[in-house]
Amino acid sequence: MSATIRVCSTEDVPKGGVIAAEIDGTPVALVHADDDSFHAVYDECSHAAVALSEGEVDGCTLECWLHGSRFDLRTGQPTGLPATEPVPVYPVEVRDGDVYISLTPSNGVTR
Image 1: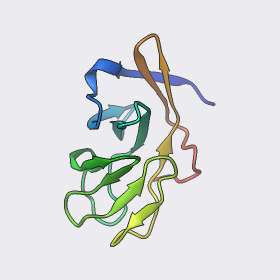
Image 2 (image 1 turned 30 degrees about the vertical axis):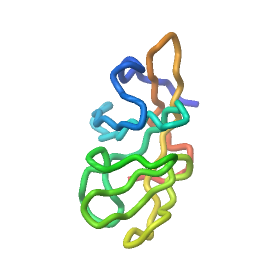
Image 3 (image 1 turned 180 degrees about the horizontal axis):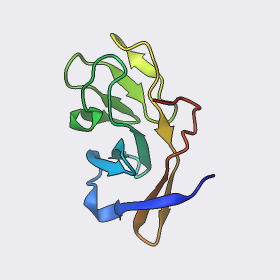
C-alpha cells in the first residue's frame, strides 16, 4: 500500500455519516458505516459530476442525492442506476483514533 495520509479523527465522522475531504487535490467521500467500518471513495458520482459526500449512507452503500445512483463502498461498483461505471475506492486504516487513507485505489479504478 502506498503512503497513507491522515484525514481526520474517527470522531469527526458520525456513524452512518459521510464527510468530504480533499487529499492532495483528490476529492474523497469518507464514510463511517453503520457497522462501524470506515470507507473512502472518490467524491464524484460516475454518472453526473455531483459530490457523493452529499448523499445518503445505507449500510455499505452510498446513494447519490441527484439521480439516486448507489455505490458499494467496498468495491465502488454501482448497485443502482443510472450509474454504470464504478468509482475509485481508497484503502482506509484507523490508527489511534485517526483515519488514514491511501490514494492508490484498491479497486484499480482511476479518475
